[in-house]
Image (cartoon, rainbow, N blue to C red; front, side, top):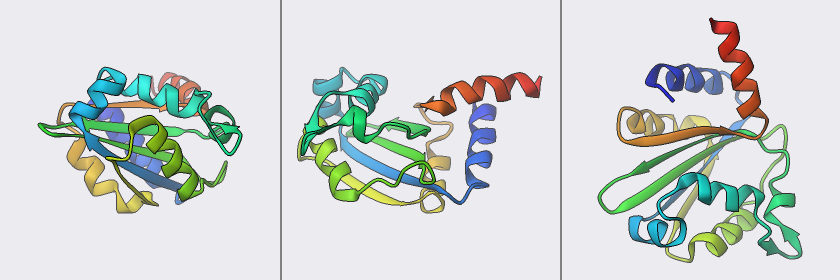
Length: 150
């Protein structure tokens, strides 16, 4: 995604006060060992995986959520910020942390909060080697919105 597209996307996200963020920080080595460094492989496991907690799979637990994720790899750490719409579904912190630990192990840091608490960090991530990708319904909506901008 180009920098201009990301800036437009971030502006649109910031206009909606219902967005919250989950920040995940782990080591590069951990992320490389578990997902080959692929944030999309990790996100597929998180959102669509059959891993379960209390008999509820990730696929069922995260069903219906939409948003965007940003990732940043530096010398030692791998950071992912997931931005999602809370009007669709509110996520329980303990459930999310448990599911993330199943996927990434216990050597992770997880933070939660409203989007505005993470905007400065997301802006820092822009322009640096990073990845961002729409997911869920927003993936298909972005195609329609980009067509209307032309």
